[in-house]
Each structure stands twice: as C-alpha cells, then as structure tokens.
Length: 276
Picture 1 (cartoon, rainbow, N blue to C red):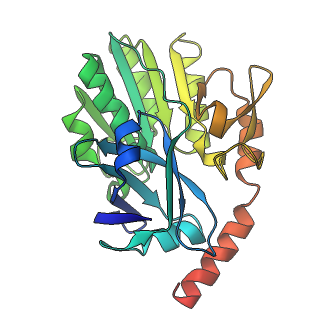
Picture 2: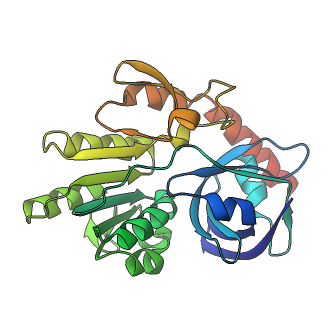
C-alpha cells in the first residue's frame, strides 16, 4: 500500500496527490506512469507521473474525474492508503539535449508535461510551455510549469485568460514569430493531440504525443490500447505511451478511446449517487 502524504484540489474535478512510494520515486523517468487500484473491488487505472522526489521518496500524480475509479481516488485524503500503486511503467519520453522544445498540455495533460519541463530545463534546453483549458478555472499547475519553463503561454477556449483559442493557435503564432522548435511534445485529449500533429506536420517539426488516454490495464495483456503507428500494430502501454505524432492513426485511436465511455459514465453516476 502507498500512503497519501499530501492532497491539493486544483479544480472542481482535478486533484494533485503526493504519494509515499520510494522505489518508484527512485526509478521514475519523465513520461512514465503508474497503475493504481483504490480497493479490492476496484479496477486498475493508469496515471501519468507528474513529478518525483528521489530524496523524499515521493511521487506526484494529478487525477481528473472521468469515471468511477477516478472519482473514488479523488475522494481520498491525506493519510489514506492506496491499495495498489505500481510502477514506473511505460517507456520514458525521448527528449532533445539542446535547442528549443515546445511542451503542449491540454487540460489534465498539463500535469504530465511538468516532469518533462523539469528534465529539459536540467539539460539546458530552452523550454516553451503552452497550457490550454476550456476556461481559466480549469487551468492547473501554472506556477509549477512557469518555474521550469523559459516561456509559458496560457490558452483558454473562452478567452477568459491568455490566448483566446486553442493551443494550436498559440503554437502557430509562436512559429510565425520566429520560434524554431526542435521538438514538440503534446499531452492531453486525443483530439487536441491530433490537432497539434496536423499543425506541425507541414512545418516538419518532430512531434511526440502520449497515447495514455486509451490505456486500460497498463501491461499489454488486455489489448485495449492497440493502435496503429506507421502502419504497424503497437500497444500504448508497453510500446509507448509516446509515439511519433505524424505516424499515429488518430481516427482509429479516437474510436478506441470511446470503447468504454458509456460504461464509465454509468459507473460514475452510480458511484456519485451512492456517495461512494
């Protein structure tokens, strides 16, 4: 079991947890994830590692409510125990060692770009972070991302803060202004990552995306996270979660991501109604 040592609510549906997990903290690399099970009756879910502190043995994760299990996880408080907290899993993301890099985080994806920003900053890479959300109240970890970035840009769909529009609009504006990115990494909803891929494709900018939204058991055994990359069958959990954005079959991935959407909504409604 892993003990929650700190909890901070970031939005009405999103919380940050610091979890005591020394072995994971010691070995975690940017882009990896953990598998979590709240209780004996619960399902396992993958959650990207937001940050890790080797000296303190702490792993930070950000959880957004999308189904019953994330609802149960978010209901936990400081001092509570998580039954299963396993990792680090997945392949670390490949990051440049010099030049300029753009990190694009949409919604919950901002939690996942934080560890990447820290690693790039430690390498001396110029970091440009673009944070997107529907409205200003849903922007998360702005202060933390700014601390590890040379440039930080906020985008909101409704224009309530920062750039009025999608993250792709801000990315295009920066390229037009002369930013010469060696690499772009996008993490967030699949539709957003696909839009980033189509933005960078004609520019010839190397782009990676995290396909964690379609993962289920995190081991490759269930086969639910199958996707096609450059015409080849891959599994997001064991072969990724990061892939070349210009080679991913996003149409297939979007269909895959909706496989259990109805069941997730039903289970969440039941859990909320029962106060679970």
